[in-house]
Length: 165
Image (cartoon, rainbow, N blue to C red; front, side, top):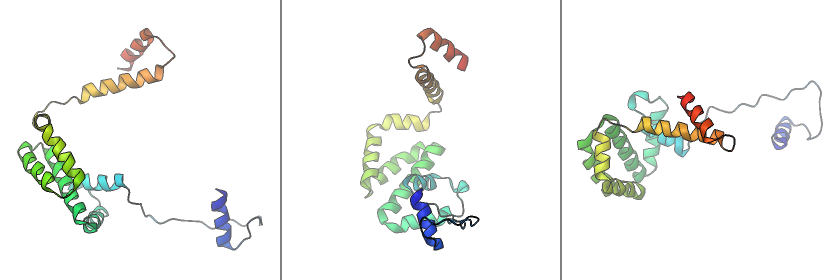
């Protein structure tokens, strides 16, 4: 904090420890520039086309222009998201072949891992069932257990779990 104040004082032309009562510091504003992080780039690539903003298209174009492997990875990621969202089981084998043949090593390793679990992936894409509710109950029980850790017995934990439902 002190370093920032020192820089502001230097920008004003005021010596470091000199104080002028009644003189406020000028407003320091930053542009609306949002730095590109891995998380942000992933989120932009995975967005549905209907949900993309005007700033997303130039960013994706810039990412694709950086390197041919990045462009291939973006195309593969978009196709995989479409396959999962629309449950297009028949397109999965084609995507898998493209991902293995592509030059991006991490994507190739991911595709080889998916090929090893082919039956499970096919079932996950094609069947309407989900274990989401079960995972939600397990998460809630784990959270309650952590909250009660060291404070209660199993009987109190079970009563609290039943009330939380």
